[in-house]
Image (cartoon, rainbow, N blue to C red; front, side):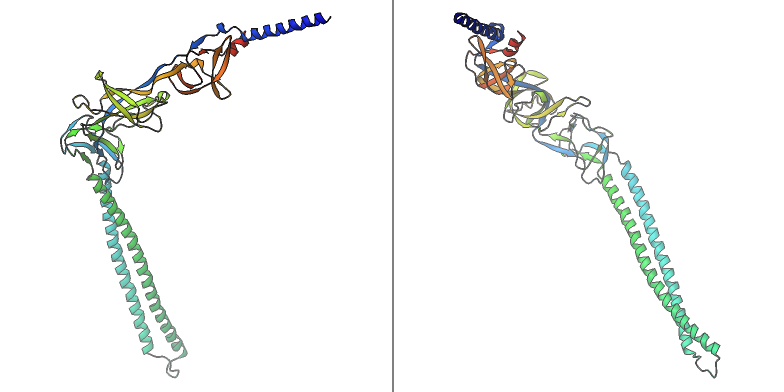
Length: 405
């Protein structure tokens, strides 16, 4: 009986081991990748244009009191001479404002004159009434009707009433004169405000009419300012005070402004090396470096939601024979350059409970090993710790493979 129980126990252990082996599955059924240290380079290509490092800006006049509408503008790349007209603005709005301002000024002046004449006539009438009331009061005082033996009671009462009435008429005329003076002063102040408003409108219109042209300060090439969509100012566009419309560059020193897809921008940093090739001669590469990166990605083309980062590249040298502002360029940005690195396929990296790990083959099983990564390309990931030369990694999750079996 004891031998039977022992035999059954032995069979049970063998069965458990067999089931465990079945669940683990054979290691040779899992596709693997052998790790070897090698050079790892990651670069990003971008397109853009050349621009001058230094340039004299051409901006909308700051003296203009309101928006300006472009009536004519020179073509991008025009060869300019000193004092050549670059931009001409539409004078229609300023001419209309000048006409209305002159009309308002004339009306305000006429109203001021009319108010002065009316106030003078009213003042003379009130003063005449006051003098007449004063004369009547003096007359009533001079001829006294107090003697009861000579004058009747009716005459005495009438004389007293006339005297009081003359005094009230005089006081009333003097009060009305003071009120009319205040009203006249207030009216003149209001009319003066209207006149000053008209004068301000005239001055603004004259300033606008004197700011209708932008001229070249010296000889050079015109480079129009492009907005974030790549559009240049054109006829009919409204511009505001100080708005930059273009520039006249200094051709001795150039730089490149390129645009990098948001999805490719990981790892881009100031100081990274780059090479630039002109679209007109792509066989010659000019070395440079990243000097500036936009903080926010934005679309380049109207109606296309793809986001780009603007990147400015300095050039080690400028070839003035072939490099001109606005010339299209293709840039290669060196993002990662490691002489010796463990670069593994992206499918060999897994994430479990917030940790990155790989499955390293150990005999007939795979062990989960936490790793640290530095950077990645479209298909490979650089692992900085956790791996050693000749490690064999699973390209699929072996646990998932076991469960499927």
